[in-house]
Image (cartoon, rainbow, N blue to C red; front, side, top):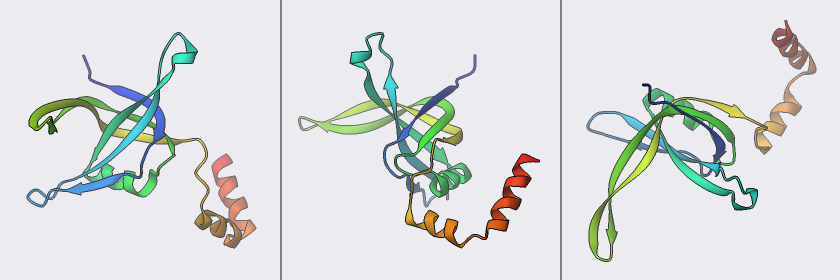
Amino acid sequence: MNNSITIVGYVGQNPKSVSFGDTGNKVVKFSVAVKEFSSNSDENKTMWLDVDAWNGLGERVLNTITKGREVVVQGRLALSTYNKEVNGAKVEMTKPVIKLTSFHLCGKKPASNDDAQVEQTEPKSAKKSRLSAVTN
């Protein structure tokens, strides 16, 4: 049996990078909001899932994923263990984390001033040639 999960949701915060100096590895972390299913539509709740992207895939995440962006996330489900202080005592906590294997951007790209400037400065002939390359 294969451990695989695919979700569609919205990114909650801009991804954050964590580097490990001893190994040179880097993990990029972000969370995705998904609607929790309920047969009673009045009770739909938002569930937050943490996602970890390692090394090169993490770089791609940093370059393309932003807060509010709709994404399809594919990966494998893992458990992350961490310590948390509860009433003065350290308690070991466990939570599910998606170890990212691939992602796809969905929906419209959030509007930014940089995009507007690119659209205005790009010649119309470049737009037409790019469109014909896509349709051919």
